[in-house]
Length: 316
Image 1 (cartoon, rainbow, N blue to C red):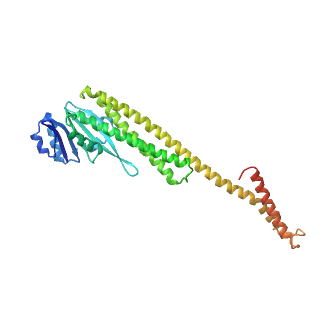
Image 2 (cartoon, rainbow, N blue to C red; image 1 turned 180 degrees about the horizontal axis):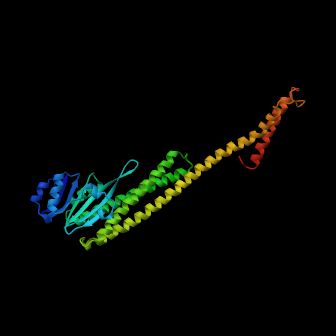
């Protein structure tokens, strides 16, 4: 699908047909949004802008040369947008092309930042008079959403901290949840750093108007703050994970301590039973009706004695 946002008589208009390129003046176009476009729509945009649009494989490459590049005609920038899921996040690569004053975006799934811009650009056409403003608006909105995700992760960490503090039962699932939070936090951090690299590259480009540099610098400060926050969150998760593992080790040590004490308590009775159970005559053993009661009494006394020793030393 293609959507062409262009100015006409002081209003913002939108067209969903590439055939309208023939009638829309080049200087009036502000934003061309390609949402899972067909080959025909991509070719029409390439012909209109006089440049080539990267394919998805090129846009998703990790190298900085693929994340940002520029030619005489345009600036190309690729970055990833995180999409929150029930348990984990997925990444969607978005391509930006800035050609003269026109912003062209290429994406494969619906994104809130684009939906919000579409609504605002129709409501406030005078503010979005060029593609550079639209580009900044998408980045600002996206970084705000990233900040919301960082805050959400921080709240989840607080919830798990409270569970540990109140002494809730810690299971294997608890550790798996912490590990998933660590992965999500790292993914958010890497995603934010990716935007930082792209914005830094744009600031170095002589093609990007200097009048917007101040807004880009504000974005870099916001990103730096978010990176510090994610680092702190990751440190909290590591501390929480170590605390949970320590509690599990203590519980296991308590269980082993009980087994050890029980074994020690049973050793004297076992020794007495073995001694008097030998096939050897001890005179009164076996000849008196009270001999077995005496043996049982000795076993009981030894067990109680061991128990009292452990209790006095606070080993129970």
